[in-house]
Length: 462
Image (cartoon, rainbow, N blue to C red; front, top):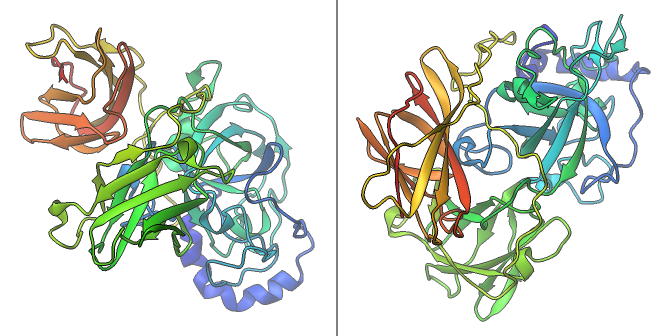
C-alpha cells in the first residue's frame, strides 16, 4: 500500500493481520510510549502525522451529522484511542478517566474547529504500518509547502488498528480534497496532493469558529418520533460539551447518542408530546449565548417518524445573551466531496480543482430583489462539475429571510441553504441559522453543480 493511501483502507487490509499484531506489538521499540493527553484542548499547538480519507460514513459521520449538512467540507477525524503498540478494539464510549481515551475525547471534540499548518515531508517509507516506525529509511525535511494553513472542522473519528490512529496521539485524518486548498502567501497551494503529500506532519490547534455569525442549527435524526427522539446540533461557536432539555417542569441533562458528540437523545416538555426545549453548553462548560433556550417541535413533514437522515427544524429562542463571539480570522474554504470512494487501498488521485477566484456579481436585480443582492463565485471546476459559492448581502434595511434564484443551475448538493425546484430553475432559501441579516450584512451558501459554472443572472429576494 502506498504512502498516499486512504487510512480508511487499513481496516480492510489489516483485518487479516490482526492475529499477528500482538506479536509485532511486543517488539515495538520505535514508537513513543503513551502519555497523558488533555483531550479537551492541549495548551499549545501540537504536531502529529496526517493522512486523508474521501468521505464520512453514511448516513452519519462519527459526530452524528450527514456530510452534506456540515458547515464546511474541510473536515478532519481525531484519534479515538491513545494506545501506542496496542491495536486491539475497545468498547466505545470509554470511561472519561480511561488513559486509552484519545483526542476524540469520546466525541466531546466534535463540532470544534482546528487551525492546521503543513509541516515536514518524509523522504522514506511512511505507511502507518502497525508496529513500525514512521518515515522508515528516510528523514523528515522541510519544503516550500511548510507553513500553509487551513481551518478545518472536527467531524469524524479514527479508531483503525494502524500506527497513525494508535501510536501518534496527535494524528489527524483530513478530507482528501481539502489538501490542495491549504493556503500560503494568500493563495491555495494547488499541487500538494498527490506528488508532495507522503502523509506529512502537521501542526494544529483548537480555535473558536472562524467568522462566526447567526445561531446554531438543530435537526432531528432518522427514526425520531414522539416516543423517542434524537437531535443533532451544529453551526456551533465553540464546540459542544453538553445539552440540557426541559421536561416535566425541570431542566435535565440530555444523554449523548453513544459517542457521536453532536447527537443527543432529547425528551419532550411533556410526556408523549412533540414540543422540545433545550439549551447547549460549549467546550468551556458555559451555556451557549448566555443560556439561550431553543424551543422547537417534531415537524409534520416527518409524518410521525422522521425517515430522512436529518430533518432540520426552525425554532424560537428565549433568554440568554444576544451577543455572539468575536470572529476568529481566516475562514475555512470549502471543497468538493468525492461521491464514490476508491475501490481499492490505492486511490486514483482526484484531479486538482482549477481555482476561479474572480467573483461574478449578479447583474440587474429583478423586481422584488432590491432588499438583497446575490454574488456568484466559482470556487473550483473539473470535468463535468464545479463548486459554487453565492454571497447574499442585505440592502439598506435588515432582512429576516432571503431566497436566491439560480437560473440554469443543476445542483447535486448544498450547504448553508435549503434548495427547492429542479430543472432549469433552482431556488435556494436561507438555512434556519443564517436568514437574519443586518443592513449591509452578508452570508453565503455553497453547492456542487454539474456542467460548467453558470454566469446567468441571479436574483435575490427577502
